[in-house]
Amino acid sequence: MLFNSYIFIFAFLPATLILYVIASRVHVRAAIATLVVASLFYYGWWAPRYVFLILFSILFNYALGFLLASEDRPRRAKKRVLALGVAVNLGLLAYFKYAMFIADNLSALLDTPINIGTIVLPLAISFFTFQQIAYLVDAFRGLTREYSFVDYCLFVTFFPQLIAGPIVHHGEMLPQFADRRTARPSADNLTIGLSIFAAGLFKKVVIADGVSVTANKVFDAAAAGGSVTFVDAWAGALAYTMQLYFDFSGYSDMAIGLGRMFGIRLPVNFDSPYKARSIVDFWRRWHITLSRFLRDYLYIPLGGNRR
Image (cartoon, helix red, strand yellow):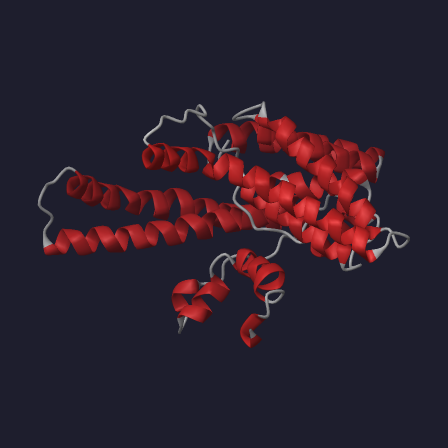
């Protein structure tokens, strides 16, 4: 259910907004729970069976986070819990993303057929895996507190950022869910959110999808073995460059706009990367939250520029 699809814009989104407003009049917890159910429905629209996978991931990581946040548990025991959590999360990610690749290469290397069947990659498994690894690491460091289970479910499943990011951090999301003001629908949030969503939708549907016609034509001709002129080659390359740019920029805007409609502020994930003056500056501007995750939970713990 893509953000630019008719069923999302004219059915899912209005229905979710209406239910959210009704639930918010009952209680803040009811509003949060409504968003959790809507997000799980959104996630399961493509492949309902994978709802069980994300629910397992949520339950597993929430339980480990609770153990890691306990002040009575020895540090050595916490290290084992953290190692188990990271191993299970990365193991699931590796299985769905690389099991078929490894089996195919082993088959070729050993000259023996290894058939593990067809594995369909679950939507957003990288995003919700990275988010929860960060949560476990911060729980081990003593940077988290005991959060409501419903709030944690929404932190993982919130549909505007679930499929294509941004990769949100518990420190910037869970306090918003706990704030009673978040579940109070306002005209300001709705109009600002709609404006940002509309801008993103224009980037995606008009600009990105518009230039994709030129890009696809040139790349398809090259793939079919046809001759591509100098001008056509440059036109195709530049069109594809613009397609990538406005597709990602549009989805980032739509995600931020959708979150704002529900009173939730998502982090900026795209900051005009083609204005960058260096490669380093480029990666600080493109998929900002992924770069932040890699810096804080991989690069710095491994020693950063000192090692």
